[in-house]
Image 1 (cartoon, helix red, strand yellow):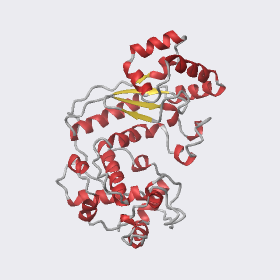
Image 2 (cartoon, helix red, strand yellow; image 1 turned 30 degrees about the vertical axis):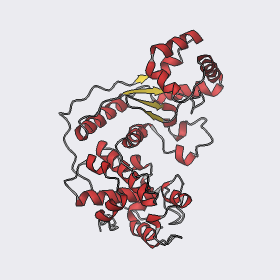
Image 3 (cartoon, helix red, strand yellow; image 1 turned 180 degrees about the horizontal axis):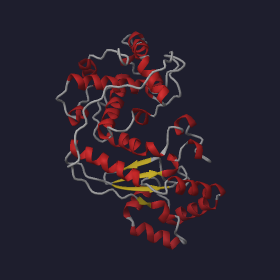
Image 4 (cartoon, helix red, strand yellow; image 1 turned 180 degrees about the vertical axis):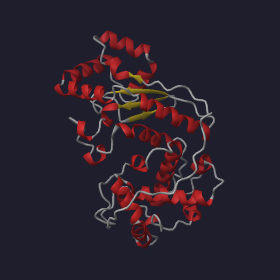
Length: 335
């Protein structure tokens, strides 16, 4: 795969006016400041009782007794790295007003497309990448979202991080990716999927719909932040789309049906799973390229079905139908 020097271009859809859509003011509660201010096990126990959402969040990860959780918290606070971690979080996220405004705007678009949408409460936490026995980058339940801020410090401030998560994944995390990452995860609630369809195409269309959904909810967010690609990686995909497409079309697997209808997990993961590169296509082809290609297919499908609503797209779980109706053809920018 070759690279070309060019400006970033992409077809954009009209953005609806949501200025009159009423949502509640977003005020993110900083759990990390509250729990690390607790001095005794009794204070921690009382905090759990007085904050049922926090207790439900913790209990979704661990059944450990309150006394055990307190011991773990005490140990965590004694680590030399913890002071640095908490200081970095406080410095990077001393103000989160921009994040609150971005969520508020996202909720306006969600309410526009889904009038029945109920606004969740949003919380932040620092769990030391799960060192407290609970926590992940983003946690979503029906009535709350919890963001573990240490994941989003950015590559330069990662003093220590979980070795089971490769750096090529963690380096995608930054303060700017908090809201896009959350909305991508939230999209799963609306994204119908045929669990009987084991093909790569079904997985691709699921991801393509999630990206399309996220862009509709966050229309002003760059595609790079939604995809987790650098600008160079995104341009490599756009300007080599014909080569990527040819690989998918010309591939012949053991089933003889081609790559889109491949069902072997280890092969599917080469194109939609986490990898730094998709070497089967080219040395500069980024990982998860099947997800990006699926987003392009979804765009083509929606362009041909201009009256289709976002909820109608998300409810369509027939991946083959979407693929065939899209009549997708690779097209380089400005071509």
